[in-house]
Image (cartoon, rainbow, N blue to C red):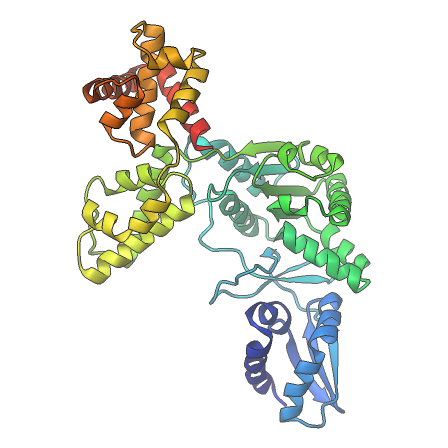
Length: 456
């Protein structure tokens, strides 16, 4: 029995146990020797050796016996080898073609983990008003020096850049401070490890691993809400690390106070550092992201040209999720390359018809009218009605402008919803606000606040 032969047997086990189990439990096993009927494997932790022994030993023995019938028992020895210090815990879906990574603690225990996404760095994070504070705070923590806020809590909706910043921090720490022991994982993975440790009576190993890190990064912490025993352990881990001046970085889809079924003491702990909101992207930021991604795509498709107006069209139409925006651009370049056409507006609409339909704003003219009247503290009936007083006319024009840019309604349809006004009146109102937006800082600020409120 040789290491090469074990490599072949592992591929057979992959088909039996599935990709996730293989990546997490089988791939990290390193075959050492087979003597006196005992096959010995090196494992990163006692926990892993015990788990594999209980759950996969029969399958592994079956495969080993097919090559060497004398093997009747497995032995797992904890590896003493060093390994990279920054890592992520196993994800639901593994990215093919990326190397394995592990995090090692001072006592020799290690946690087998999947790698960070190499695309998520500070260099390719596009900064704009909605995310500039979160970016600055993440940069500060990534320097690896003493920070006045602990924890750093990043929150925001799907596709706004939380995970990108988390990975970027870990990459930067790996580069700047390779001496630090950094552990990055999701709240679900923390919970999974905790449950496994309870089941296998390995809680001391679990506590040692988590409490001997220098930087703990937990993604999507809202998933521990309602899980009482997990919250309890998370709370104690949190306290132990803060007491040792170790840095904690956490992300969630909402602010700590808004996470339902999260214990008050955990909420209080999470709120004691810097809590930063990643706002929904604005048009300028989405356009900046598209422009940076076009440069990346040009490396793959150097002959493709993008006609003026295409990026602006996409930035207006796909407004809720940056991942969808980036995916749309990737598909557009691939499609244009395959059909041998320039990327113009017609091709964009043909290629992305399903994405554009799904991304159509669900915001209504009536919703915009209500938000604008509330913002300016006037009655809705006065804003829609015939009065031409400036205190009503300006909010009316703001609402027309937002209706034009945030709904798919035509100008005549918008006019009908504003007391039966003509489409030329709507056009004049939209133009007037476009002019004022450049000249009047208050109008620009009002538009941004209203847009955020409507897109939230």
